[in-house]
Length: 98
Image 1 (tube, rainbow, N blue to C red):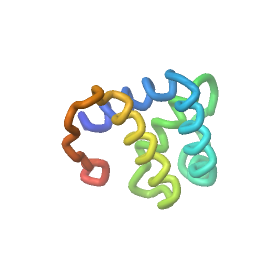
Image 2: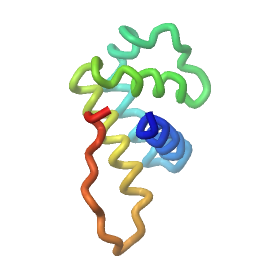
Image 3: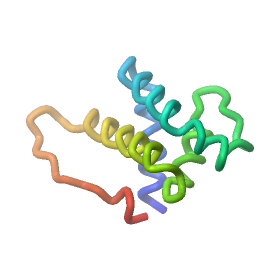
């Protein structure tokens, strides 16, 4: 549960950031369009799209592999943006453990 909250907040920061965030958002939108219609059609894709994104995250175990890859890439992109220059990164992959 805590991982989901952290991921959601992290992705919110990611999508609220710069042009790179727009690229990631477009990637998720393209990769997850079918999954959105299948699992999240009742969630309106309005505003910044965070409710729709949260729905996809909530369904990450059942969405397509393509969508899972895009969500994971968005998460990793966001984590990379938070790392301080020169700081050692400890590999983390708790994406599938939740």
